[in-house]
Length: 151
Image (cartoon, rainbow, N blue to C red):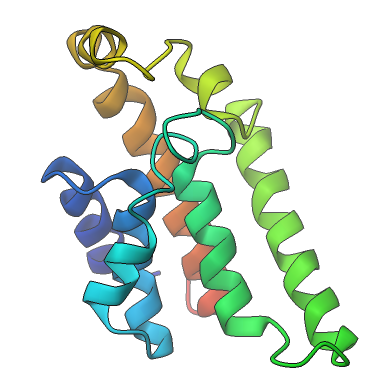
């Protein structure tokens, strides 16, 4: 397991990147996508996609990383598509076992779609106490998937 890469991801989040940006900008460069592009790709995915608090942004980013690594480049390649779907399914299942949901709103428990809600969440330590462990879990699973047997 590359603890340095996990810590780098967590530091990005603590430094202002959203959850998805943190994961994408750390892991997609290992698959050939430049870090600035990877970071931009995650801009709208934070807080459960556009602050709608749907699927966790870190988890969504993890799905993109796994799809980039294993997904199909042509529609006819159903074997690669099925492989990507299965790996993403496993990622989500593992995440849900730990956090009881994959939905940002269920995990956080505070509506962060407004400035007031975000302030309440910040004051309550939600981003530190809940989001950081979610990001870390996604990273740990990505480390296992991207480097099997090296953990």
